[in-house]
Image (cartoon, rainbow, N blue to C red; front, side, top):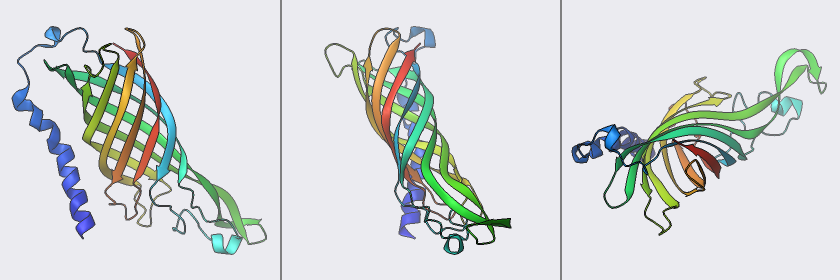
Length: 229
């Protein structure tokens, strides 16, 4: 009960946190934004990890005890992502608030499972098929970036205090619901190569609410390359 309560609190924060900035937005038009406060579109990838494995679930290890298949308990995998960050407010102290839209695909491995049929896989009377553990998500987050961190103006640390994330898992959980909602929290560093390109590293924690009856929280850590606009 306590776990569900603090997850609900984080979801409410993800909805309300961007509203905190509205009273302090400067009265500037888009055209008045300083040219050096740029947005970007980016592509990335790296390591992904599940906080808890999904072994012995109905759809991840279907009839594995009868077919002799290994438990589907992989927790480490990989991810690819793409997204866009749009400057909202360039502050006078050199900090920038951006709105980020991020989408990613995470794969955590997979094992064989036995499905009813006439295939007779491994002499068990079941058809054997591979079941991969996959997550996809889309998140919408405020990002706070420190553009004045280094005298060169090229090194930009940033944080995402809390963002809203919508996700789907495959295979689904025991209640056959693949959809989940949660929050994302992250930090990283971008480096401006020139006026057109950036590279960066980031770490993100994806906290799932568990409305699909299973725990699917995960993390991602990787690199990215971006095109500035």
